[in-house]
Image 1 (spheres, rainbow over the protein chains, first blue to last red):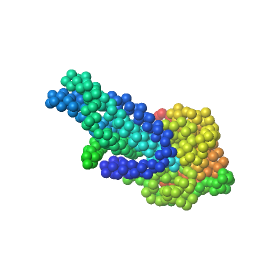
Image 2: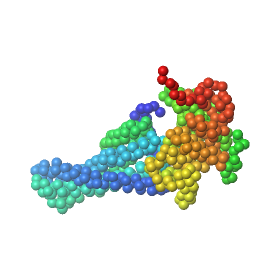
Image 3: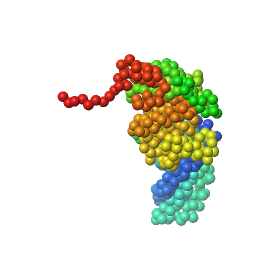
Image 4: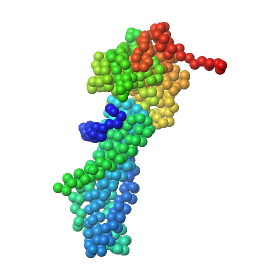
Length: 251
Length: 260
């Protein structure tokens, strides 16, 4: 392998890694402890940040749209706009970006240092497949954790929007009215849309970060480079796939 | 030398494996580091590869355990290529890494038992017992619950040997087992290598630049430099070798030159 693999080679390797991980799914039950540990770590590390972030995203969304809509005589649209924007777009994408930074980086760093310090070679000599041992638990954990965090983020975001809509004098929309408007505009399908998206993003973050970790070269600097690349590549792919998935889901 | 191998583990009669290397070549980024190696390690013997740092010894080891594919040539374990997919299931092989390469996220005990846990070969209670046994064998009986980061360099190496012992290998490779160790710890490691070989008849291959270790444990020695084998023979034959490069490596000595 050349020291600087071509971009398509990289994408190919990521797809292959994902495919191998899928094929090792029957081993998931064996690795349940590790899946659970990873799952807890993702939740632990991110829950508070998810709350703060989504509360303020919901709040600022209400703040930006609310006064204008009220002025135009459409106060009943505030709940709907905040509700739909969060459920279908903002919560999945923002949380995916947050998790790419928070968890993707950790995955790349951990696996990368294992690679640099020959721990992965040691696993191989013991006939333990690093994909089964390292990648599968991480990918499974994030594939469950991120959608759950997104459901949580959507609800906290709605609450943030409702709070701002009630407190802000230009809107002064009571909680009950906000949520009644929201319920009349947001269908369960919209939330499902967002959750499905976040599931896809989770697979992207997991595959990209684990692949980056496994291909780390050089010493500590290599680990740093891998972490940066894992986060940047994950975010780029998240934004790209966001468009593609949205386009597909519109039909 | 082969005859000296003990009858080994009664459960598996042909214990140690034969290792044959033929015409091995390897380059990295266009730079050839191994230029055609040929040698055979017989079942049950302790074979030492000696050579200065950077002579291609560690790269060779990675080939011998199948971590690196050769550019040309072949490596045969009991006549089968190391690159064939079934080989790992057929023969048990272990590499003791120079740094130990213990998994830093696991305790020493978990590291040593990893092979058994992951392959589900034993019940947790049995694994606990075996791990305790092997760690006691290498003098680390009280380190079961420590993390690798708490161990000294020598202890890490001994833990890595314990991890290899758990596999009950038929071929064991040691990468610089005494580097960075004081003379006393080196002797302990050397004795471990010899004891394991005598007890089980495992084929042992040691890569080192430690002359004392090499002449202490070896049945046969190969001297390697710049990706080539200069000489192969019993310790006595190597000592009597007339090749200047072999002699200069064996007899290199630090001298205090008087200031002029």
